[in-house]
Image (cartoon, rainbow, N blue to C red):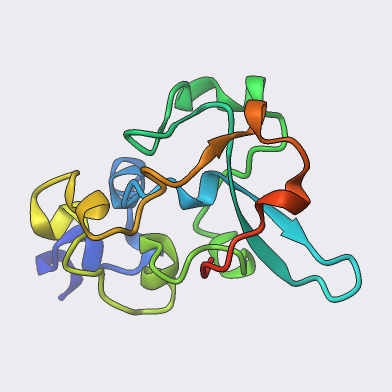
Length: 145
């Protein structure tokens, strides 16, 4: 029965808001700018971080009011996860939507918010703020989304 499972093993549709928020692995990669090919619709990763992203902790500095500062900030929902092809393959939301388990470095399994950084999954140490970046074309990276 699902009620015996830890919440992160349940289908996304069964999570309450607190569980949904807790599922975020804290990598910060969804807060990086993406470049979209106008002809193919393909997305390409960049090293440009949203101005609200704390590049050390990989967390939003004003999460509750982020849409006031960044109107086009995408709010992940249970309904939208499947349609966001740019979500990283390591993203906890994407993994659970696909019925896959979380990685061992996820804080819900490791017990530490630092494990995402230690595993090299987060944006820590290799990004630039959008306020300093300049042209997006100069920031495309050869790194999977």
